[in-house]
Structure formats: C-alpha cells, structure tokens
Image (cartoon, rainbow, N blue to C red):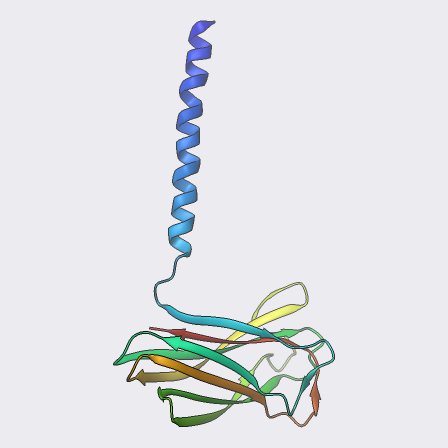
Length: 165
C-alpha cells in the first residue's frame, strides 16, 4: 500500500514538470522577435466609408534596417466582391516623404471560395506591400483607404498592418 502511494507521489511531480515544460515551450514559440508592429483597426458594422482613412501610428526604434510591410484584411462571408482595392500611404523611409501604393487584394477565387484563413464567417488574408529601408528611428504612419466604387463598403471587419524585420 505504501509503495502505491509513493509511486503516485513520484508521478505527480513528473506530470507537473511536463506541464511546465509544455507551457514554457508554447510561450517561447509564440514570441516573435521579427515583428516590429502588428495592429488591426475595426471597421463599423455599417461599412467602411470611402472618406474614412485608417491611420496606424508606428514607432520604429531601429535605423538603417529593411522592414517588410504587409496589409491584412479580415472580411466577413457577406463581403460582396472577389477583391478589394486599397490605397496605402506610408512615410517609413523618411518621415517627410510619403509613398502611396494602390493594391488589388484577391479575397476569393473565381468560384467564390474565400482565399484567406477562416473561422466562422470571418476570413483573414495577408498581402505583401514591399520592403522599405528605415533610415532613422522615429514615429511613422501608415494610412489605408479603400478605392472601391461603393461609398460605404460592407463586409470588411478589420484592416491591419504588419511590419517585420
């Protein structure tokens, strides 16, 4: 009887240590030292107004480093189009000089199947914008607006910006 109790007591510390090791592994695996900035702005349920420009204010602490800039879009399954046109302006290279790109983002294939990763009725898709040389540390901005024909674009849930080293 005492042998069984002693065996149980030995197993519990081993079991607890395994849980601690798994927890630490998951924590460190989720840490991403490449990501400089990652944020989403929520779009109202009533739609994204054509006149509404989303602004992301970003602080970059490194200098003379290339960063990879990406736009991310979360659309609902009620989004009425296959694609989205976004205008993206940023001053990452020099805070006084703005660069603007207009991107066509493919959200669904020709059959209407959503291309992004999805859960429920929400799909997220990431689109590369390009690499930018950040010359000086500082505070920068990325501005995003839609270039669709609708004055109020329905079906977009969130718009995000990701910057990685």
